[in-house]
Length: 200
Image (cartoon, rainbow, N blue to C red; front, side, top):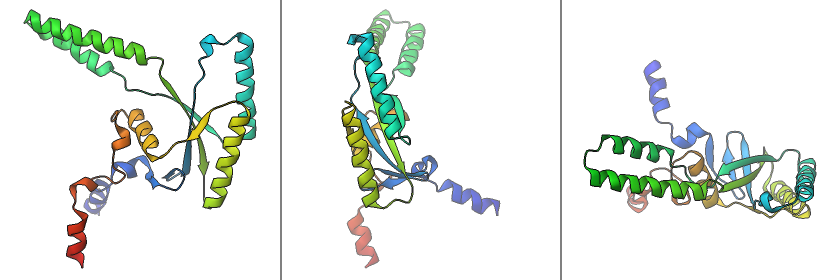
């Protein structure tokens, strides 16, 4: 019994482990329901007056009142380089050749400059969760959410599959090119025309 259970567990894909079931017409299907994501254009509050910041906060409260089930996430919109920088530091300490040490130091400085540029890069994502709703109901609620955001002065757009994949890849620190990850794991390793011919 235990061996059979272990075999079944071993066959689970990464998607199953994360609770992802695939893309739908409007969003991402998960074990917790269908999620529809909106990317919101951030506002640089450092250039706003105290009064304008309070107005923005009031507008956000109005959105959350109109859409009480809205989920909000603030993510890094780019990868971190902490592990690479630590690796460079350890390599510099271990290296005997001064020319190689110099080259490693230059690489470390380059990573520092990139990280400094990206330290303020944030991505604000809003999510609506749907459970057992029909496509027509989801479409209606998406339009209501878009209108509520627009009426309060927020620029938001529904995220497509490639944007959602990139967001998940950055969140799980998998890849900068998450939008290019295939929808089905391992699909690129099979020639579907040959498989279909074999079953005929």
